Image 1: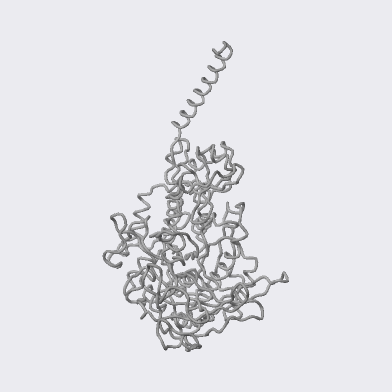
Image 2: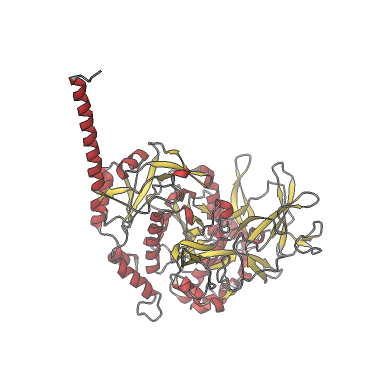
Length: 637
């Protein structure tokens, strides 16, 4: 049937409306520009699992970048050059902001646009580096012209944009990155490996107070037939660790951290942390921390949603970091800077710590694989680390506990942010301490596991199935820094035709089989709490120990040494003990409880870390080695 005059008019109106809408869309697109690097590598159609709900709240930050970037790069190089008049001439936060902070007009323009799009403004830091805002997924999709989809990421369902966001063309010169449009930073996790205390009245011993104190011939030794197998360490004490690394000599000379401050960043705030710190100090004969400990909520983070299921891991991490920084630098002040409710605020917590110079050493025991991070997140934290370097702040990160990350994520990946060349990446070792506190041996941390069936060991032979180990490897993000040239083995660390940053830089005790004691409050079945000691490991143990040593060095010198890596690599032959391969026969016995409460005996091998390996000189498990504290502090003076 031929269309009537009315229907022909309606068709024409619809067509005209469609053309008008199309023209408006094209006009808007023409007046906007893309912010590159916001879409993470995992946000691809093959991983897509559906759309995110429109009403879900999103917290994001628009990063502006530094003014005078070329001048800042020159300054950072001169501050690290002993021949320069600017060598270690650190800027104050006020001086840094005056020279490099984004213009107030840029903040005003970005803030105005965000408000016009209906977003709530949450915070702008003193350095004006970013504007943090919040809104719904629907608002994000409309303002940035993206679809917020859900993607499968290594067993997690994670939100992410399907395209690079668009902003008004007038803001193109101001905006360098946008973070928070994807949810990967919520996957940043503590890098500790705890052994929760057994139920009250139950023991899963035996264990040894020093290496080889207790051994067994009841189980065959597949690595050294006929040799007795040692039992796991119950948890080294601060006195033992201080003796093994020579820290006790510094304490005896009055070098104990007094007058210095160590900052620790993390997510959540343990409700029992002060009780735990004081119990740990009392039990280990350490000075009370009390008024020398404080907590800070990073602005803009207290509205973040949170997942209660991950809170306990962060509580453990906070107790470990604070207690062991205190153990090594017992008179130092400690400030814990929290992203109040979610790991997505960790970058804001870092910026707050740096921008307000809350400390001259920052310990960070969290991270994720590089493959999770978007280009925007990398740009954002790089800017924070540049300010830290200019202000003479040392930033340390744990290298991770999953070796090369293949077992955890299915792909080879260094860690992030620990692979940044602007931070010190701290790897892990297995440490044997004798009955007099002496260091018997130290080798790379990498654990294989076999389980006793009642008649034989079950698992891959001879070293067992890979369980965990120190993180390390080749960065796919960063080029090789000058301080690693000539130190990293020839031919190692090439990717896509160029040499890259490799990690870790240094290493200390991290293996839970040779771990340390720590104190934390645990819930009881009756609903109360009990303060208990248990043992723990992970590169998030090694990191606060190394950060505390850096604080001791600052006290001894009467100044901040700032970014550490240039000095550490330069002093590797005089202040570090090279960690070399073991003879391949090291293993310990460890008892645990199965789901039914029955004791299960396991064999844990040492020095077998995924595809990473310990060897003479720099290696991708232990870096340049473990520090001998007296020599390090003397050389840095």
